[in-house]
Amino acid sequence: MSERFDAVIVGAGQAGPALAARLGAAGMKTAIVERKLLGGTCVNVGCIPTKTLVGSARAIHMARRGAEYGFSAGDVRVDMRAVKARKDGVVRQSSDGVAAWIDGMKNVTLIRGQARFSAPRTLRVGERTLEADRIFLNVGGRAVVPDMPGAKEVPFLTNSSMMEVDAVPRHLVIVGGSYIGLEFAQMYRRFGAEVTVLEKFPKLLPREDEDVVAEIRAILEREGVRIHAGADRMSIARRGGGILLEFESGGQRAQVEGSHVLYAVGRAPNTHDLGLREAGIEADARGFIKVDDQCRTSAEGVWALGDANGRGAFTHTSWNDYEIVAANLLDGDPRRVSDRIACYALFIDPPLGRVGMNEAEAKASGRKLLAAKMPMARVGRAREMGETQGFMKAVVDADSKELLGAAILGLNGDEIVHSLLDVMYAKQPYTTISRAVHIHPTVTELVPTLLQGLKPL
Image 1: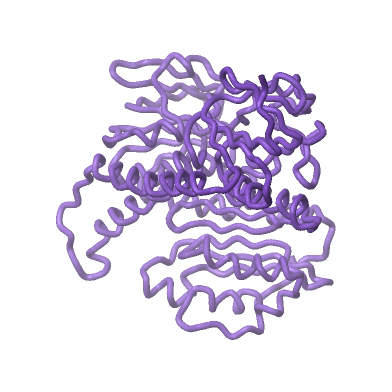
Image 2 (image 1 turned 90 degrees about the vertical axis):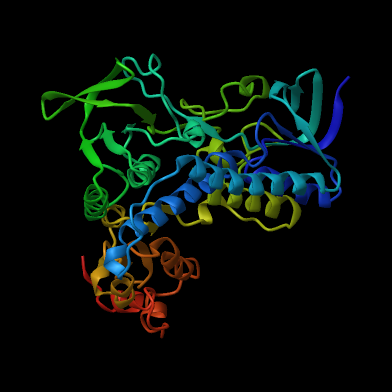
């Protein structure tokens, strides 16, 4: 016998619990189904644990730099079990918070298990059958194993299984030179591992400008991370107690031996076992669910939020999906996915904060452009803090004076870039910032100076 709900949410990641709370508070009988971990990727194996590890890695790095600041911390020894324990504690606090939040919701029932469609707006969870007029899919994604010889025949790590590592690898080889891979590269180099990054394409971080990529690479290489871009025709095999990766670079065969390998080549949506066909839900060739501007799928009464809809791969875009769905359903507010401005960060140290278009995208738009760039070495606060790596840059529409995009690679760049983002959302001219008076001494105070130096691009 089927159980009837007003709404069923599949997945307790970033968007799921928040939406459940809104629906329950509106008087809807709501079920939230989760097969594994409350909080999803971000809380358990993504943002929260990795940034906790980044915090430990930075503290270790700064202790080693003590002489630059007039002190000595002596021989810095890394206790990876303690590092992991700190990370586990932060994660536990967050996941326990999600559990308590769901437990306290009105009209909301948590169901544990794997959900799969058996018919339109009908889900099977174990022996239970759930029916609802509204179903919301918040199923997230998983790490992809690269398509190369031997990839599945050797012990390997992903961003998820890296969370269980409690010893510093002798030599960590990372396959994939994008955001996740580079964050782990710097982190584990600071923990004391040898680190080699192999990237198939000639350029790291393909969505970034060339000067941004060059400086990020330089930052990592200064710390001893070895990077091979254009590492094509890779294969992997066991070698003694470790692994051997062979690849082609510049027309020559090369190889690198390591103790551990981390695959960081992308993520796939968790839609392969969801029964989309039975529900009449369309997906693309990679399994991402097709949605409209308000996260509605091709099936009546079904929405898809978060990583699995292919409209954003971040915690903040997942949360915004929830806001859009809730606004349309409950508030009479027609918010849209296309209203949001692209923004994200690379959480190396110093971090990269990125908003809007890069230079190539701005040029392709056909606009008349202005651009400015300033090295962090010109920023007094950066010099005072001993953090002068990187630069900030921005691009502007010369006619409308509208900010089109910015990159801040440097001290607190992931925070500072929001001052530009907010002006972009307000659709105000760049002069709103360039004529503002900021606090001295800060990094942000140089953003007006940056914009005062705009020149034709």
